[in-house]
Length: 474
Image (cartoon, rainbow, N blue to C red):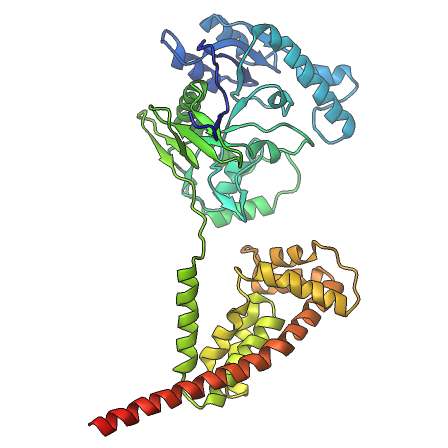
């Protein structure tokens, strides 16, 4: 075992781990788990079933599989404490949730459980602070938007969002639940992604994603009984059979064997049969019992060789340009000016038309704007805004530049919406941005003009000497 990787769970005594299954409803996931180990030598044993709902299927499953059942009715607990519902929409209700969670923990302690499995367990709770808790989630948590998992949330939310996004497939995901801190449902879906099901085909029942999106937009207040909800319910049932029921038992067995681990940076690992830890993004489990590792995405590093090739490309574009040296220099200087002063999402549509006005190089005007790109802007714009803020004696916070970058890099915003969002950030930020950009442009634009002009003239003189020498030789 590698010293740098720590197992999420490991029993040094070699005993079979004791597990609590937490459930709230029909218990189909719990039943599949119990059947997966019934009459077999398994990597875990179910010590107790716990439920928050006395009317659910827990009692039936307990009798069928000879497993003790414990219950603490969460709705009655809230009612006994003067609350009509169990929503986490006030400090008082969150405090009650902590109290309820503590009582649950006290109920479970005599069973000496090693970890918990949330198999259709509805209430958000603080059990993950006490022991590892696995949860099966009806959403593909491998998909991210701006670095954040897209299909998070409770109940129908992840599936309905996937349907309105036009996804062709769904997946079930098994994660380690994060502790509940402020009642947010997104937070508990942010834990390590241990496994996903194989893709499960979506059935829109003849509807288009656009139609479903319009239905979602027209909603007013729950409960929703529209076409989108009906289609989501049917897809959730399919996903449960082909996704939840496959990936949850598989991940639980591997987890109980101590084969999932993490390093000091929070990266996920899986141990192979030899005990060697291998980095993973997650593992895909198929209905036929096979599995395949989904490798972690490698961060793209711009190597020195890449940078040199890029600089060489720009150099060649400068020196081999058509037209006079002044023609080339004007275009590149214009591009540099636009790159310094204008936001990155609209530089080209300003630079290229202006290149016709000043009679400058069109290629130079386009490539010159590349001084600021999505790669360089996170380094340049904070400095520009800081300098501009000093020039105009503003009072911007240190986070102002990040707000600007979030607007520029949001793929969901159209060109017009980005300008609107930019304006919504406030006049102080816009003034600081343009003031800093103009100061930067005042330095970089003349340097670009004279630098490009010099390079073109120098290249043409060298080329002329080579041609003259070739003529004399001939």
